[in-house]
Length: 448
Image (cartoon, rainbow, N blue to C red):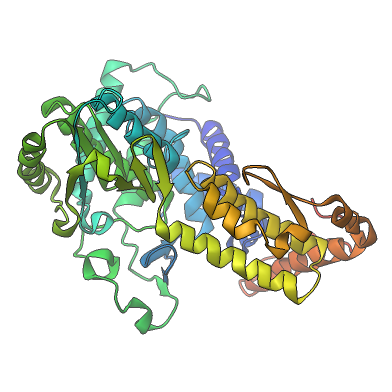
């Protein structure tokens, strides 16, 4: 069994992972007010097996598509990172390479490149004919059976412990099987709907299919979208499908991102025969359903839409939705530049938006799209671009404005930070706690 000092070290490490890019959020500030006490208390609860997840909030997001999101309190997010650190290394060794979601050095761009690689490999560099079968699952996250998922996880952990009982994690501490099982059950079998705070109007849920809402799922079924552990559990659940397609069906050219997956093969008849086999396997083994409207079988020369990109022979294009969002964002910045001269702080924020889209589109055949948007853009007054529009920088003469208003920039940052601290302090004081950390910033403090 893991000692309390080792467990506390793991919890501190999980806290630092959970707070990345969340330092100024309200929930993180509330937790940070009494940081050491909260982490030690959480360690005691986990060690004594008295930890219980708290209710979160539920809301609807429309970007990039309409989804129902459940956000857990920051305290529970620390536990999610703790459990992720225990399970992820073990399952990473088991998963196939062509599973791209929520894994280090993977992601959508690698998934697009791997589809292109598989097409090239199957066609011998486009010399032979081949077909692409794309499949999707209906309401995947809301259809995951928790009992079946728990069986898959425990079976893998048991096999891992039998095959190599002395294998340790990267931090040198032995793997605590009983602790991991307790955290899995505490996180997996909680009811995220019970006691959750719903933010928004009931009309926000209009147009959301019942198969995509956890509020309408039966008991014991469905994972909340928004938790780190849900992403890991979803990969573990469909790893059974990956093994079946790769090992049993012998499909060499296969890849998956969450519930979107593809198979490339030279025989159209072979791919047609796979559809009922995969449908039956998903129904019998995982209680999942293929989406009948998202079964696509086409020749590779027609181009395949996968993860927001059209993969065609010798080239790939970004999807129209991404191009539309890019133009909408840039047009908004151009309107702002025409209406007046932006501050240096605002130019820095604009630069982040521009480089985010340019850095994405540079991986596709999109030079004409970028040139048409930026060639005569008022943004060129303040920014200079590389030749291929892969990156933008603020022009030097506008960088000098930073020296003119350093105090204003610092004061604006300090004001935002102190407002967040004051709001979090008010929340905690209502609970009767004494606060000494963190202290408000002074006006002459510089932002980090």
